[in-house]
Image (cartoon, rainbow, N blue to C red; front, side, top):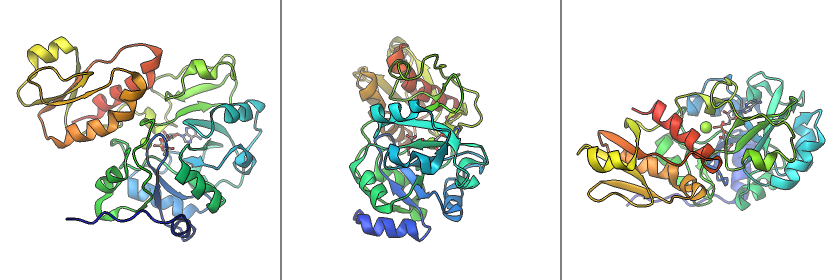
Amino acid sequence: MPTVPATPSISDAVAELRSGRLLAIPTETVYGLAADARNAQAVQRIFLLKGRPNDHPLIVHIAGAAQLPEWAIDIPDAAYRLAAAFWPGPLTLILNKHPDVPDAVTGGQDTVGLRCPDNALTLQLLREFNGGLAAPSANRFGRISPTTAEHVRAEFGDGAPMIQDGGACKVGIESTIVDISCDPARILREGHIRRDQLLPFLPGLLAGTGAESPRVSGSLQAHYAPQTPMRLCSRNEIETDAETDAVVLALDSLPHGCLGLALPSRANEYAQGLYAALRTLDAMAAGCIWLERTPENPDWLAVNDRIRRAVAGSG
Ligand code: TXA
Ligand code: MG
């Protein structure tokens, strides 16, 4: 039986980062592929391992709002109010970058994404590391984000970095990204934290465009994608037309006679299981994944966004 490597101690993890190597970290959203954000060479290793274009900026993970001035300038009061309300948690703030932030982190832009993740192990690591961790999701570029340590191992195989195993991510999809370097502020990526929760802090907040911003790689149409072709369909279509070589991702219960999985019909619970379910279904090497359409309402915006991109990039 293959041995699963023990999760490293915090001090070993800190030593790994200080020596310029990568470390996979658990967060409440998805696992991150972290490097010392002050070390441009270490950050470069993230792009190499992921196969991600160099001009796609990374989020810097910090221990709390007290670190904001080390990474950003012109920080509006709203940043501190948002941090007090939602950090640690799945909210990334885009702010004007501090001149000392390496270009390798920001892709040469004059803004930087900052967030404080809600995971006890990673918060302890951040405090002991006493710095910022640049970390994208720990998947190869364009593929499904990992929500367990095992997913990270499967993603990179022998090339996998040291991994801190913090169990399954409780949110399951990437953080909400809000650009507060501009006025009015704008949502760049939908996530667990919804626009109506942010509006009291950011009057006039613009909704996400759902696509275009080239600055957000998660905004590319093809993203978070399985290798098996995927199609969206109604329950009725699944029940009557699903082909014999299809597997199904259903809501609540799997229709009789179908192979596949069902996820809960509450948006947050569905989000928590979505990426693991897509990985499992992808591994079944079916001809097609038939995905039952989810409700169209604000609770489902972030999930529907990820589903749309997964379908667009699949196959
Ligand atoms: O939940 C998350 O945000 C996870 C965990 C690991 O924290 N991270 C994550 O990172 O999803 P990544 O790199 O897969 O997606 C971060 C997105 C990218 O699409 C990137 O383009 C965008 O954030 N981003 C980072 N800095 C930015 C900036 N200065 N301006 C605009 N977009 C930015
Ligand atoms: Mg990603």
